[in-house]
Image (cartoon, rainbow, N blue to C red):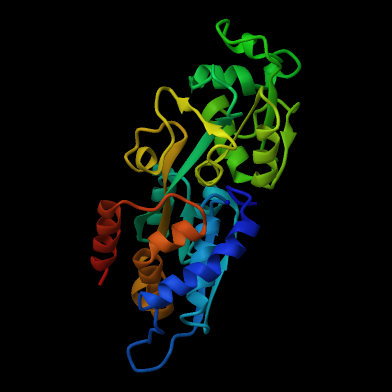
Length: 315
């Protein structure tokens, strides 16, 4: 989620506004079907990337149904599926589709599930606004910049590409507690956690923005929303020829740093536990506001329709 983006302060600032929006859109209290308000637990575990979304949904839903207690753990996507397939959770947060072996484990334990795409995730590679040479970086060039073996070796932009100027390379990025760190290192360097250590880390993305804004040769990576919020202060770059935007993340063209995010719902929990059904329905119905509150890329209209139809099929 640790979170994929270090967003605690930003989440706090946006939840209140999102709650007002949802209230204005009709976020009234639900009931269990017999006229009483809902109560009871809803358990979620899994990806630290998806956790901020589920936590945002839980925080906002608390204003709708205070009696429903949604707990969100972060044992990682694989750990979440292990608990989910053992019948220990109602929802599994996942930053990738379930693997065949995991699905087989669920089946062996009699756990039937529904996969829901709940939001989209995009990371941006950024440079100082005065950088006029690195408008487009390839994955290979990003590997050259960030690979573990580049530590103490690749120290200048002209070492990344001979056409780049003789400018010292300064690096900023999330700390190791951030899910963004895991995601970027896995996608760019091929192994989660594989990265040179001679960069300036921070769990506060605003600190990274300030660092990159202050040095001509600086570069770094963090959530797309921070690029949009700091236009002119920092500059996003194309990756493999595609610029990071909400649209390119949503249409799948921004790869490998854009992807869908999932929740997996235990079908029995959804059908048999009124509080689980109500929370999941709320999560999907209000996914746009929840994604924005958690600083993620919202679903497309088609993705919302698909998620709604998948839940409707459960009855």
